[in-house]
Amino acid sequence: MSDSSTRTRTADLTALEMLPPPTAVVFDCDGTLMDTEPCADAARSAVFARRGHAYDNEARAALVGLSVAQGGKVMSNLFGVTRRGWRRS
Image (cartoon, rainbow, N blue to C red; front, side):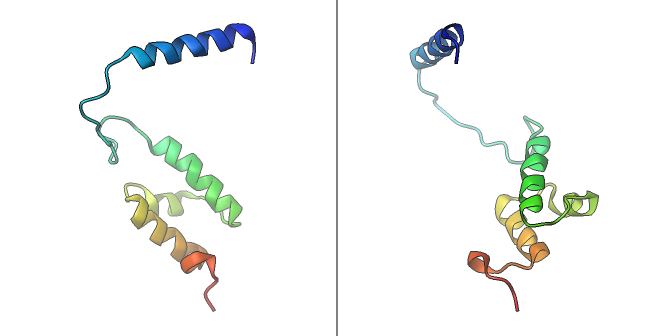
């Protein structure tokens, strides 16, 4: 990291520290405030690749809009994995 980028990052952190703590936090899990699907797609694609599967339109359609818990169950079924990564017999 260069000296100028270190100074900028330090200034950014100092500015953040001067802000008052939040009085509320919003968790936007359904895309109302922010479109997070591109990030979710990138993460899912990496998980699918590690398992040797393609993250195609069919897989995406099965997962878009689900909660993390629901998506985990769907992916476990798609990958044929049970609890703790054991393979189904």
